Length: 272
Image 1 (cartoon, rainbow, N blue to C red):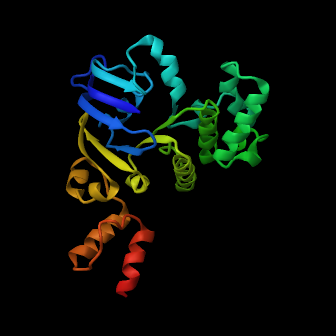
Image 2 (tube, rainbow, N blue to C red):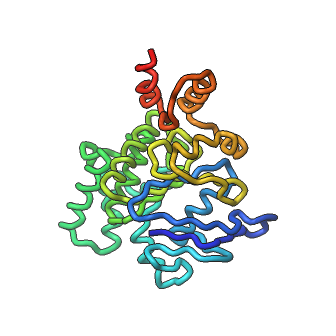
Image 3 (tube, rainbow, N blue to C red):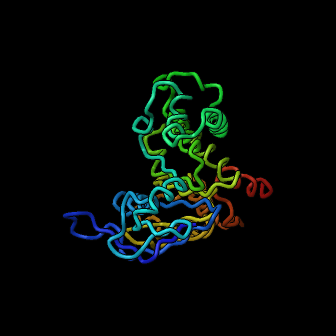
């Protein structure tokens, strides 16, 4: 679905490139987490997917289309939807259902099709009961879900979340993550940029970035075996993983598959 082929990108007046010879492939239907500390290049990488940024060297292709070809950009942006940190910057009207309908209206979709898309998108993010609410009455997590509903109404194949949970409280983050998991379960390709390692445990694959390069990639259980690399990248493993590793060091026979509190408790209970 998405291919980064030896891409390099350097911001104007920057002393060093934000991305340096990065290659990565994302398959259709995958749930990928791109993690890294501030300045690691993870958001810069994400913005290359729909042509917000174009590589200085190398190429990015989406469904076989090169982002450097201007005639491809509209098609690519119909395939890839992006949600950013601040949902207030993505909401353009005052009423929830009107905001979700805004994108399809601008594409010239028929009124009956718009109604169906709005209903389906609100249902997908669990916000059907809020269709006629004023946007400013919603919580941060609810606003982010409405922003995602507006993206879903455009019928994308890929959802990119560029630190979309960064401005949310723990409750809002949990709401957002639950919604994203459901969308992936329904077949959507998801790429999530985050600093919160606990958000990555249910992903298919984690890509760790540092200094504009990929330093580690693998399944969550594989990546969390390399806590040394994570700490060197200024990333803190989930608390459950830290507890698991401490218990393993004490001699408890725990597997690397225990990544969250529920999985850890399932392995600990028989030992009691």
